[in-house]
Image 1 (spheres, rainbow, N blue to C red):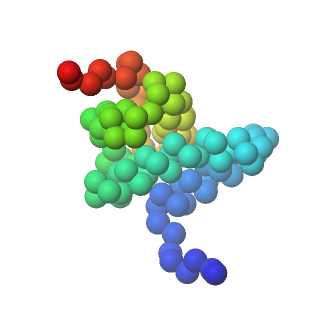
Image 2 (spheres, rainbow, N blue to C red):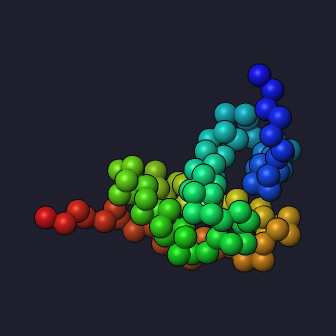
Length: 117
């Protein structure tokens, strides 16, 4: 079945990033590995009615991080990898001129919050 829906900005940015990674010689498997956290972020921001990368701020990224710690029970290493890949993606968006600053630049990866007793 062919997807006839028009591409949105996020689809175009992901495609551009995948092309960039391909030109760097990254394997298809590695590219999919890199794109997975970014796709999760895009889904998360769309659920919060944000449609453009410049609308994402550090507070939104903190919510994203907590969501994966608390709701998905991900390990610190997994969340750290997600945040790292998101930082690299935002650096790419700066390179492309889509945004001016990386909202994930100073985002800290702290240990998973302890559940209250």
